[in-house]
Length: 108
Figure 1 (spheres, helix red, strand yellow):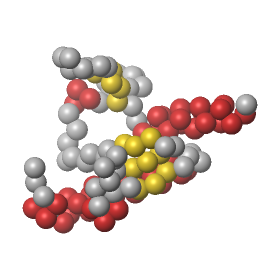
Figure 2 (cartoon, one colour; figure 1 turned 90 degrees about the horizontal axis):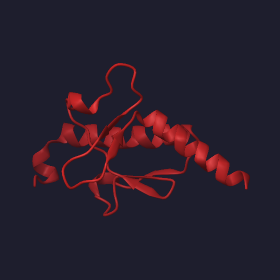
Figure 3 (cartoon, one colour; figure 1 turned 45 degrees about the vertical axis):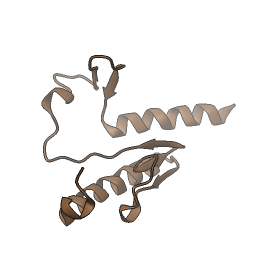
Figure 4 (spheres, one colour; figure 1 turned 90 degrees about the vertical axis):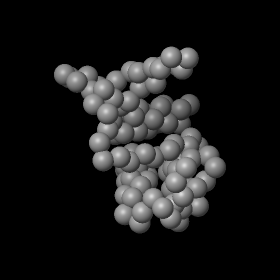
């Protein structure tokens, strides 16, 4: 595993930019969100916390094409052998769903 020092300053900056962007978008949807990986501290639960759930942030120059929606799809469901299904959807769509659930729960 590469140490943060060997990874390169710009790569660490790009990762931190993604974390800040994810938190900012979540807050735009009126969700409680925090950057938990500040200053390279590497929080044991994940990089960002949104509504008491932790998420890792992965930034790469290129995302595998098979993970990206084709045609007019809203997302991509994928699965590996001996693994449960996962879905890749744009962050804004996911956070919209979370905010709708939060509003519905708060109504009661």
